[in-house]
Image (cartoon, rainbow over all chains, first blue to last red; front, side):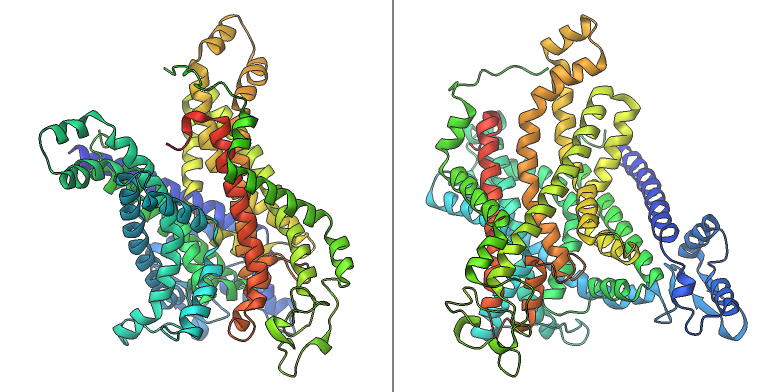
Length: 330
Length: 302
């Protein structure tokens, strides 16, 4: 019951945050810029054609109305224009790109697997790597292992992903010829090739981010190992493995989960940068193309989609947090 | 309750900092890079090139630099840029200006907003704190890179791009500082001398100026230092993606982005700007860590 109430509150908070962010984003992107209808009206752009284009896209309405139409479109879908030329944008409609003649949701759906493949794999790898090396460094405190793990983490924190990625391509791709130097193969097409093309991006992104988690885990583990209940567990005669794995790790994971929740936005950014390094056509490429052609519906749709994604994921992390640390949900 | 812990070895923070070899190395590197940035035109004129002049005679027919290691020679110390033949040494030293300027500028903005938000949230508390903290939390996890890339599309073309970068990166960079400062402010509020001054009738302005800010100063300095490398990294990442500092202004990130196409044939084109970016980030991280340990021994590494 308590957990349910906790989840309910979080859900409410999440919904209101999404609403505020969507409003602000919409305001920034539709109030500031040049007339989007003019951008896609073509040449020669007579006043009649401009008005026609504007009405077709729905830009002739007051912008608050446009915002409400946009919000409505997410739940019920929308139509643009009328008659023969009408286009349909099924729910969840995050806008329609008149330049690419495709709903933004569909565009995102085509590109998202690339970016998500990079992001999810890298996140799993970096959490495993970061937490395990942090625990190892804490347990073997002061040894060569500990010190080299910490030196490595300082270097990792200071290395940009794209730099490590390019050096990785140079070494493992071109010189050693072990992995492909770029490109993406869909999972559905060939799982082996999919994995093969993703190994290097995952390792690159994971190595860099694991550094921070190793530091965090180490500091936290050292603190936890000094607690009374650890001494009690040891005094009871529990095996060291169980003391660390069960009593230590659970308390170490709480701050790790918090930081991970905050890093989800960073993860998306990292994936966007990585896909560029490995010339994969993901969400980042879609966004940068849209910026180049000033395809406003795609830009706004993608920005909101990213914000929604991170906030919803944060909500999920909050729930995990409630399970790990029952004190939170009271 | 915050208990005042006596600082065991009552040594001056500066001496503690100087005893930390890594921090000193980081600080020295920062100084050298600052000098390079300031003296960039001088340095490149000593070498004899500027970062803008094309020199197609240094390239072969495919646009690849002539000679070994991307055209490294007594004339071109770091070689030349593929396709254009511009001098890479001049580009790298001038790039230091861009990186440091944007990095430090964005940090100043982030610190100013962060301190303002943190101090007021911690000091006034109540609903004001709850609203500000909520905004801080949301922004902390916000996919800002997507947002900043998108903003590039609608920014007026007349607005200087570098200033825009400073503003946007700074505007997304403050939540971390705000959080720390808020926590410290709330802790200060409980301290005896602050409670006493409030009881004696000190006004808000007086308290903030005389008690809060001086005691927050070391935290602010530490966090500002630790924020700079992140900001430099943000600018470089945006330039790498082609939405940051526009050409022809030299920027390490953009050069690294251009180096993607040349990784196999001219790896040195990647190595020089890459090493510069790595070095500046590492130096600030080491110095920031050392500064934190020196100014605040309680959070020092155990």
